[in-house]
Image 1: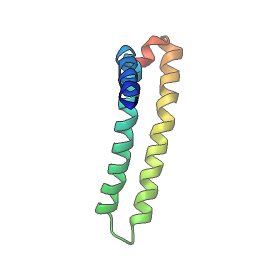
Image 2: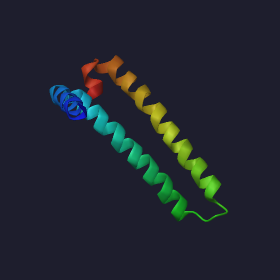
Image 3: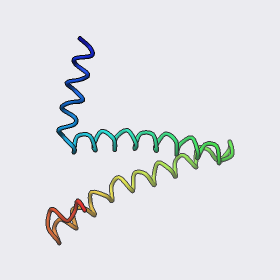
Length: 85
């Protein structure tokens, strides 16, 4: 029964290209975020680790905030479809 459920799931995913891309993007983002945190922890000294992680968190928050704002400006200026190019 489990095999049938997995087959149906992958059959539906094959029909929806955007869903597959969204799942892939989410998985890649989670891997990159974890790997970046580990890399920063390896590069920083033990005394500066808290500061380094704080800076990393701030930079990631700025990126997550500025992306939708920039897309909104592009959508308002050039149209909705241009913000997804």
